[in-house]
Amino acid sequence: MRQKKAPMTKRILGVLLVACAMAMPAMAEYPDKDVKLIVPYGAGGGTDTAARLIQPQMEKMLGSNLIVVNMPGAGGTIGATNFAQTKPDGYTVAFLPAGTAVVQPHLRKLEYNETSFEPICRTIQEPVAIMVGPESEYQSLDQLVAAAKEGKISAAGSAPGSFPHIGAVLFEKNYDVKVKYVPHEGGAKSARSVLGGQVDMLVDNIGLAAKFGLKPLAVLSEERAESMPDVQTIDELNGPPIRLSIWWGLFAPAGTPKEILDKLATACSEASASQEYVDSVVAAKKTPNFLGSEEFKALFLEQYKANASLFQEIGFKK
Image 1 (tube, rainbow, N blue to C red):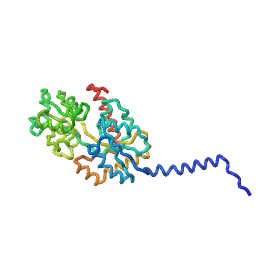
Image 2: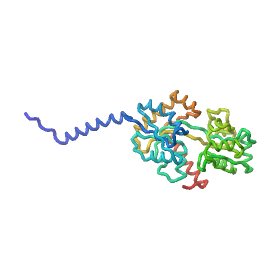
Image 3: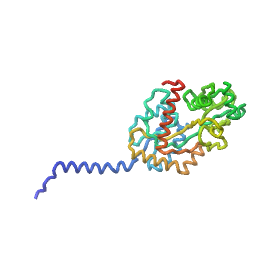
């Protein structure tokens, strides 16, 4: 006897159920291929170094290769713009520094903003310090501030809008003083000008103090820097609660599915907690300072908004 054919609707339903069953494991198996890691600076620089410290540990936790792709140029904005336009499927992530993520969008017209990215984790944070030369006549924060009130102080740093410039502006605002800002090409040249006595102070990554022999007077954070624990915080010196740090973190494009974001966040948390990773960061003379996705996102948005207000106040326009 010939069997009756199944009704068309039942056959279609069966096909859909099979398709769904085949699709479900694909999401559960993420990642099932290499993941691209965009680094918006050249190989060997600070951002590239920080990215390559977390890369091998992330690979272990994800069970997939994390391929670094360097896209340098324009203060990291070329790589960040390219990243913001990638498909949000978890197979392209980026390792961005604070300057590229929360400063550059306020200095020029860019194709990305605070809604373009999903923060996954912060891996490293370097505290910023107020520094002078070892032979400076200003051997304390009080002495430096007193001289600034008399209009005697100059500050070195990178181009306007850089972290050293922001630090000098915050110093001016919080102490109600005027400082002559002298732009330099990068931290090394700024440090050498301070060492040579051509410029009085530098507000920058505390790592420059150890590298060039500068004298840090205060750290602009709630806690002392692990790399130089003898340097007091500005709070301990009864100064205003100025907060400034340079961080690096992992991001996904906006619109990435939550299941993928959660897996990336878990992998980053586990990678950052591994002793092998911590030892490698310390050996590189950097400060491991992990923040999970929720806390990192709150910090990211807070700093993005604060920089927008600050640059508007001091007259920076795109």
